[in-house]
Length: 362
Image 1: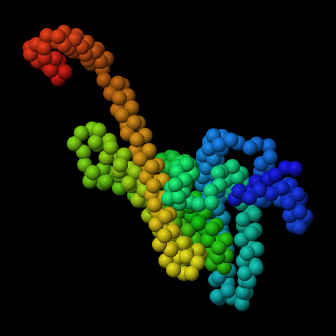
Image 2: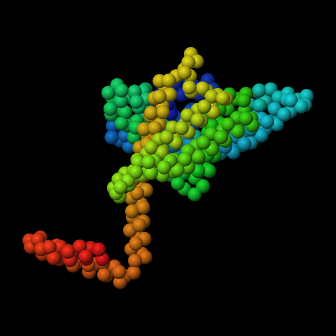
Image 3: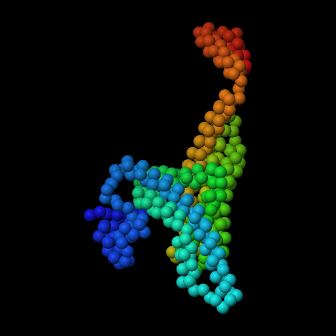
């Protein structure tokens, strides 16, 4: 009998799916689609296959979630407009809308814009192939499970790459901001449907702005940090810029995350307190360290790529703009220097050494 895997890692038998479908009065295929379940019987990967499958799934899931956020933002604008109209009507007319009517209006809007559902199904499908852990990355390292910790770290880095690529594209920062705002409104409206409207939309747009601005801040911080670190030679200069990228990305992403969590707490879930209402210091430290570490690695990697690209661009620029006569002259000088050095290897002649120095100056 076939078994099906849900996005959260839960495995259901075909019999269990049939039972659920009967309870809900829908077909099994409809239930499978709604749950985002996939048939796990056909393919059971080994450890190496699962490693690459997990990283590919992480990449696809992140891209799908970025794509989902954009139509979600369109829904948010329409929904906030309708909910605000209802709020005004409640205040200034005899018509009072019930929460049920408000929820029905939101469902109609959500069903009218279907692109986000396609992205959501793709994200769920990708997530079903992810490696599931019952503890966080830092906990894995603390408990000595280095393999799991490294695997989670690599997955986190891979998941962060699409946002970095999108931000580098023309209009990418705007797209990222819209996606974050749409995802934020969707999450907050699910947590607190009674608070839908203009204030929730404004909160979500601010969060989208924070996400987009964090990338710009990172660029500015990179330059400043590079100057603070200082450099006296080319190698140290490159290292300073790479370190600047790493520190800038770690700071900006962690700050953006905590600012947006703070904005969330004004409407929905408060991620700064535990179940008893006390400040959850341990969880705050853990998530900031994890975000900072992953973002730092991504920023450092971006710095290395930027330096390599700049070096290639400079070389290409010089090759294109340098006249052929100069290229020829440089080649001749190089040949003379090589010949004189080979001669001087055994002679150790001061005069020949001076000639080599003069040729190198040219």
